[in-house]
Image (cartoon, rainbow, N blue to C red; front, top):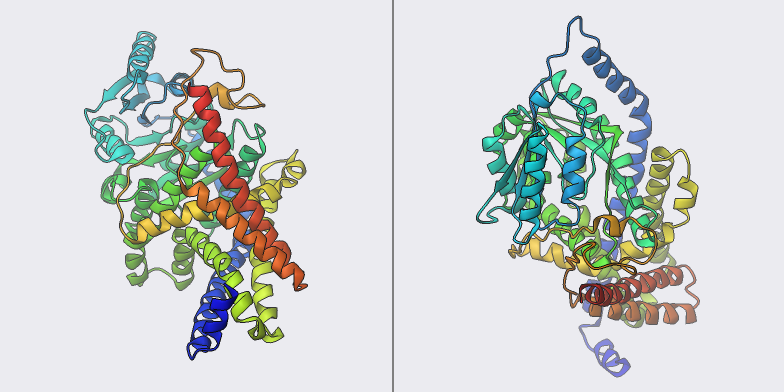
Length: 524
């Protein structure tokens, strides 16, 4: 390798090659700095608006609950889109039937695209609930056209409700869900949808679930709050929310040309003039994936769908003269957020070549800003996560913050998986909507998942191991070699960052393999 580099450096292409590589490095570092420092913007917007938002929410609830006559409850249809969810569908249906709302004003649709015995189980549960007086129906399709978006669209055609609640199979809504969300549509005729904050039924199951919960809290407690409370574009998160039917229809309905139909529809709704509402104080518990391959599949779908939505939606956002420049910038950063992963990957790949080719180029004039970019880019998200834990939890948040290194390593390790998703979106490569497997009770008992599984207690639904784990392990080794080289050259600031990258890539790759082997053992 050294001989080849010497040949290059003796040629006339040396300066051009170094300039190109260094240019890519600086651009990616600056872009990561931009995305990172926007975390501070989110924290500021959240802080300055929380008291006002809390007061406005309470005013809406007071106006709804203090009429001079009995409340005229609007008709609500709760939609439950499922696909092969034997482990959790019973829990979901039971929870929805327990929701405290007039039965004659609450319709329940189980939108079942299952291809296994889930359909038979659902049929029995629906028949039982019907006999108890619930307005519940079991809607089956002969195909999965449009996947979740297609199921929701077909269900809406038959729905009775003017409002539509949506819950994925891994969610367990509280009894007061509708009574805490309906008022915001009923008292604001311009509100198109309401999104609640996600909770975590198995937050403390493992370091992996805890790391995920911290990341989710950062999105909901800070980012969603900041966007909603400051008039920025807000995304519906696919579940645990309530829609106004008219808003969906005027925005063009559910569409399946992206893998994030929820993000797409929420933006189109707001472009059509409808306002969103995020309820920080309404928490809807859900199950977090305990298998890293399921988590990576979920991240792949979200990353690819977000970039697909950015390509579809941003041109109109930029054209609109009635949208402020700040709101446009925030929409861009929001929809393209997953671009940070290919940027991280590019920077990691370039570390060693630049070390050999451009060592003399790294003068203080270049290195000081670069190091500043890198450090601030790393610190900013962690500041957001710490702030979100303090906002979301009165107790136990300090203990959770101690697991931030696990989240940092996980975020780095996802770069290979999510970069592939971003590339697929940019190349317009089609892919199937892969739902995230759920395990129900097996995912909520602290300990090794499935270690004491008994026959008949649940279905595995494991996903195949992607070959990307090999690239993750390779990138871990590549980063470690760079770490040792930089350490040898006494680059003590860059060194720890490279060690974090090495641990992140290697951990995600190795754990992916181990979880796949565990799933095969359980399934066997």
